[in-house]
Amino acid sequence: MAAANRILAGYGVLDAFGHVSARHPDDPGRFLISRSRAPELVTVADLMVLDLDCNPVEGDTRTPYLERFIHGEIYRTRPDVTAIVHSHAPAVIPFAASSVPLRPIYHMAGFLGRGAPVFDIRSRFGPTDLLVRNHDHGRALAEALGESDVALMRGHGYVAVAAGIPMAVYRAIYTQMNADLQQRAIALGGSVTYLVPEESALTVPVQELTIMRPWELWKRKV
Image (tube, rainbow, N blue to C red):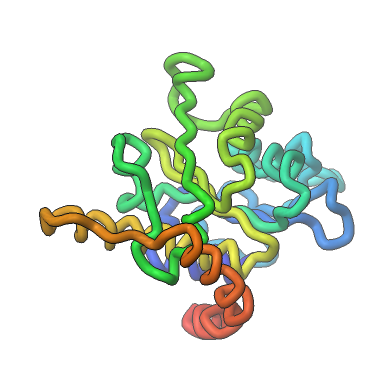
């Protein structure tokens, strides 16, 4: 968890904001997340345990992240998910505000072939500050995510989910990279060739098989 925060900060996926969580390994009804702190500064000592109602347990009185409901409601909705990243990476933001969908342009982001739906909080709750502040907001985001690995948040950022911290970090990083490459390809002015669903589906098992290679490198760097 501490490494994930620092890796994502190092790659510009997280800045002073954003967060990472992991389902508790001994209790699926709880999850681990840092106290409210900039990701680049997170250490093991900063980790808190929250229940799925997003309340700190074990008498922890430290301040949790305001948007912890992103995590609690996705864990409640998706039992297959054991790690979540919420990011405001700039390259991704335009795709949540545009009619142009985020699509996999290269094999490293083949997981996007499962879809990258857009959650627009205004369409459900009217004008807000765009933050996921409560259970209703979190449930609506989880519904928008559905069975996808990534959901975009209009005017806000995105979430990436996976069955493990290394893969969640991988998906958060390569979602940003794919968004940057897709914008470059569109800017060339010609037609853009994306991965077809069959190609996307074939990339995911390879990513799962090789995930420890980048994870080992990323951890060494931080």
